[in-house]
Amino acid sequence: MTADPTTDLAAFAQGVFDAQPFSRLLGAELAAVGPDSAEIRICNRPELQQQHGFVHGGVLSYLADNALTFAGGLALGGDALTVEYKINYARPAVGDVVIARARAVVTTRRQSVCECSISVLDGDVERLVAVAQGTIVAAGGSG
Image (cartoon, rainbow, N blue to C red; front, side, top):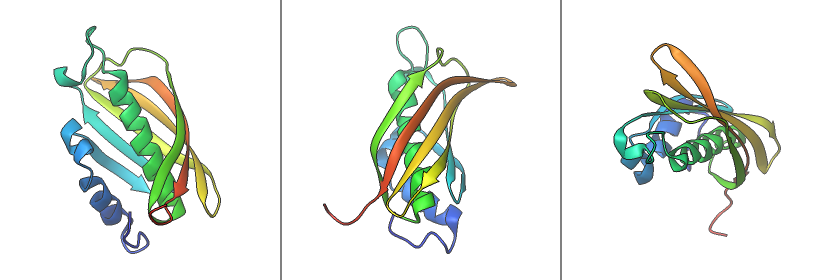
């Protein structure tokens, strides 16, 4: 994230998202953003499932990581990186669409602690399948 997010938050976030080849590979969509929040969705398909037909834990982990980083980065006002996160899988992810919703809980000048819920939408029913928490830091140069 290098543009000025105060000019147009949605356009800024979408530009960053569009620059992620892995997100394109998975078919992810940045569905919504706010000044300290993000929602990312992926339509379930066989290529994203493990041997039992559940959405693979790696896909859920990607969603948590990326949604947490977007929420934290937006709260911090720009370029950001995940320094750690933890995910708890609550139940198998079976449904049509997987949705990650993250928000910044506490933000300081250099870091943001964020939380994320991951649900599946199966018809009209939405079920929580995982929760995550992470720490996001403002990226400060090449390190």
